[in-house]
Image (cartoon, rainbow, N blue to C red):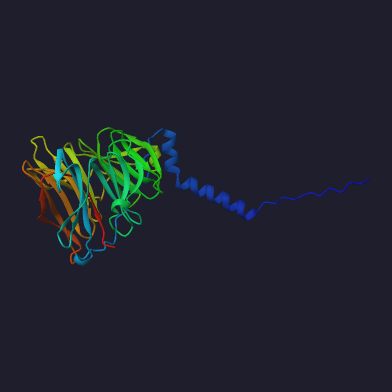
Length: 347
């Protein structure tokens, strides 16, 4: 039997082969200096450097009109129990209406409220010595006795923020920790073990920054489980809190070696290239314990002196110039320390 063999004939493209030869010859001509340097052992410098990362700026800030202002919810405590409406308590939580300038007592407790965080589409979350729970609903209304407990508090939470992909993030005596997943189910895990972290903030809903008590300012790399970090600046001062304003930069509450307070400003451009720090309000008496930035409106801070505690406004957003200007306005004073505060929008 004769077998018929089928052969597949492979033919090269003569024109393409010629083009490849021409390309190789041209490349050799173009790179002759590079090849010469490589053969001589000369160190080659890259032509293009990889640009350092920086925060993507917000291009639009929606100004908040006086008619649309919400409120500041804040919690206070003292070294000992104090009296509120005839009861001895360890902490109390108030709501300060920015339109009416009225303070409303929300609740008192035998445990201390250490952190507050407003989460868009969810409500206001509160962390105390005993629990983490939702105390305002999605519309910005106080839930009172209908507050929803999300998790028991394992350790005392001193600062708290939310990342949509990660969940509720906090600071306790272990460092930066995961408190819940993004559906608010309990998920405690140490993200960055560092025992002197003072405060954390999320930027553009995806970047997480922290400051230590001694003024080390850093950013945690994504994903957070890797726990890598980029050290941005060492302020070399005792630091209590920091805030971020789009198109303005970072604010830091510090005290120097002589126990004078300073409010420092660091612009967010060239953030990872040793950014300069400006002494926005230098050398004044009274410790700044907490900051609160309301983009499109202004910045508030709580300051503690030997005699009392005041909530002050430091920056005001100008809708005409679209810039923040310095302002010195006392909103109210009280006897207890403000240890947590958050802005609740008017919805």
